[in-house]
Length: 356
Image 1: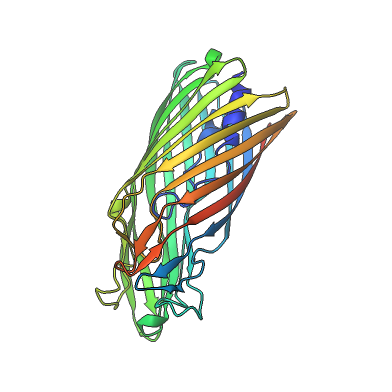
Image 2: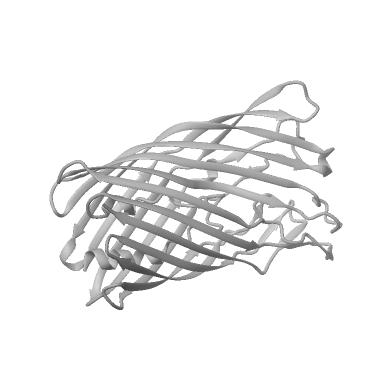
């Protein structure tokens, strides 16, 4: 039962984090560390957000859709050293943003664009004290970098060079296999970066500091009836520490990225085994709408989502696929001069896992 129902739970999260707090695209996956025996997986996600706004004094002036479609790829592998110790490695597209304000709209930021990229490479170990208790932890190498173009600020163009910092994660888990119960708590540390930044037309570079947030994640699942699993998660991220400034930009433009609030994201779902080969799941997600002013490079505030997915298992291979619809929270940006409402995103994801 445990193996089958964990597969069902995975079906409800494979489409990834769509417009979760800040610019997180994927919570570092650790479920692979709880697979039986040696295991490897490849994951793919495609996200199509539709986020647009209007100029508050002139509702006929619209932004057009400002968030671009994107795809993500991930990889994880785990091996058992002995009955108690397992080692794993994962590559995850944790952070990202793709913003472009279409030209020809008359909106003050028309033509502006920004791109951020940040991936995590993590080496993880898990040690089982017995059938019920285990601890896990490891090191995370987190990278971040990007570029920015602001035509309304004198054709300001900046390139933020990629920088990596070493963080860590640590956690504990309790399991009761006979009822498919697993509760895991994982803490991931903050990372600090200094981005070597060049500005077009300026014969020098600048060191720009930025912090990426710490997080605390509680994952849980339990069997509630024959072949039926209840699962969920609560994830806190310390986004209020993250601020990114553009060198030589006036205070009226900076900060480029900042957040007034931390975020807590909730997910809950139910999974069901339909046959020896197929299981499915449905889940809902929620992130609080805080209100206040947000940055134009991330004009969203909170979310609600629903996702369905399924897992097909054949011999040593399992294929998991899911689709998520996200109602993205309304936001006020550009110091109150633009309002983003009626926004949404659709994400599809697939994961292929192999036991060997």
